[in-house]
Length: 303
Image 1 (cartoon, rainbow, N blue to C red):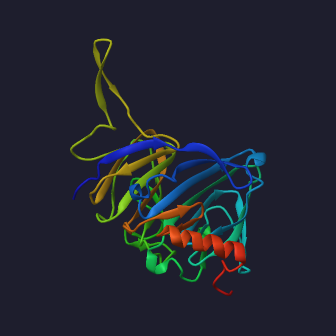
Image 2 (image 1 turned 90 degrees about the horizontal axis):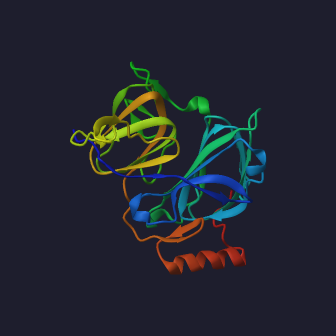
Image 3 (image 1 turned 180 degrees about the vertical axis):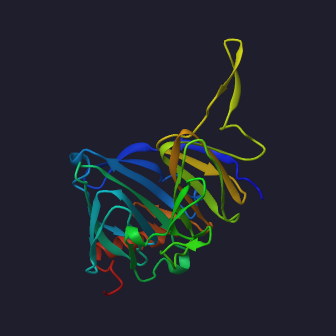
């Protein structure tokens, strides 16, 4: 077994999307090879309705899959093919945009005005860029949840983990998408496909991720004012942790415990031509998508 080293950490950056939704961008619109096959991750967490209620009005997608995971509040969605629905707390929507779809997503807070969810974009390989769009809407109660002996809780959105499989299937990147809660003062080892790119996103508490040869991140010896002291170097709220190669992730929590997304997928390793919500392989394909939008032929599949 080989522990994955931490290659970088970074904090999610505040930004605005849609019609004025305040959110934090974890990664996106940078070098796509860094997180291949994943393109973007947004954390839309807010308890001020004016900062999210205008939502994400009608917009196009082509060439990707979008994964919306709701923790608090609800998200109402509808699209140009006549699909519509409501995502409640704990639920997931995995949308394969494929050849093209127009849709909108409108968030609503819970009884106290809180809204919290994530949207992850996964790339599609060239062979599936123009596949027919499809939805997988999964209710929160249908997502398997495992509680380990030490109190660690893992919700399996997609992929196989600890002998159980998530309900989302048929995804091009064959990803693993977990929601992991680790109790205070616990050390845990989580298996990961060695051929996959992987990252963690901490959104509650603090956690230290480390490999066996480099315990930095759990306890660091430093000299401060002439004295050696032990300090904690943990990744806290809204921190992205990227990993190198290996088949296990090691994590340790302090007094707060931690909750994080753990996501992994095998890289597609194809050229990426990217313009907003449209992701193709070449500039010519992007230009064709724009022409399709302008002349009304963007939607290729009938309901």
